[in-house]
Length: 339
Image (cartoon, rainbow, N blue to C red; front, side, top):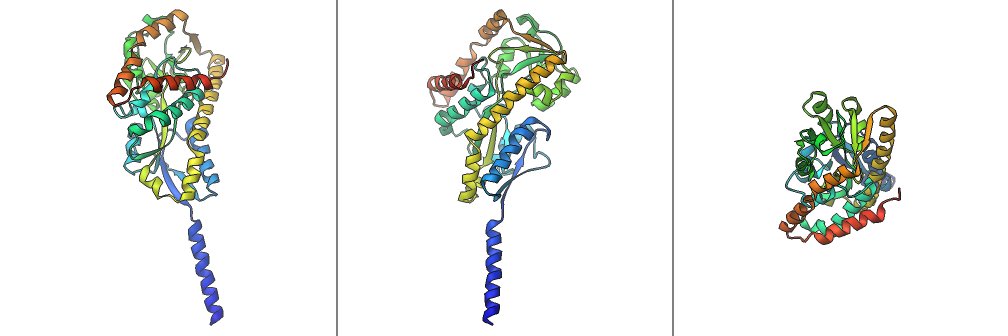
């Protein structure tokens, strides 16, 4: 009888131990194609890092289909429909005023420098604004310098005027409008359809996205603007309640794999992609035109008011933005690599 009791106790203990080791699982909604570099080279390695750091006890599972449109993903995380999401602040106008700072033209030459600056600036100045209320921000990063991809060559300000171009949010709509372009606010995933159908004459994207969305098939020219025609950020976020429900060990693993570690990973992937695609397009005969000094000055003059727009908008949220803007630029300069 005593032996039976010992065996029974051992079985119960074994079951309890197995239950304790059962992985905590988070469901992630990702609207990007499964073959997109953000999915394969940023999200997947990040998920693997989380699982490794947790000893296999925290698993992030990408759902086979997105639970909503790209612009719905912040709300999906906030409302707990998805545990984890990737989103674009610019796709939800009116919420992320602080993020518009990171979309200004001519701010940097690499995704890594702008991404680190954006993450650090958000943590230092903007987290208290509560723009991500209900969502735990796990990473905030930027793609590389955005450029102008079209069906015709652009050499002057007049060549830009009247062009129907797909844009993201932030200040890109304002930038395009200031240059008398016709902005079409659509997700990047719709670029191919817009261009192939003739609805758009061009699209504004970083170089790596040309290959990611196969846009070399529907464009012939790219205007390269030193310092970036614009920038745009992505965020990886998690429902706050779900985050708080994780075990301390799972939180520690998630935190260790996220934040600046995720930001550096993403920036490096974007920079490598930009460099690779630039070479590939040039070799394939895609026409690459570097903006002349005159054209760059004209673009800067036409868009110089955008910085003040941001300072006014952030002031309306109760924050003097000049110090944050200065810090943001200092962080970019500190992380730019000599060229």
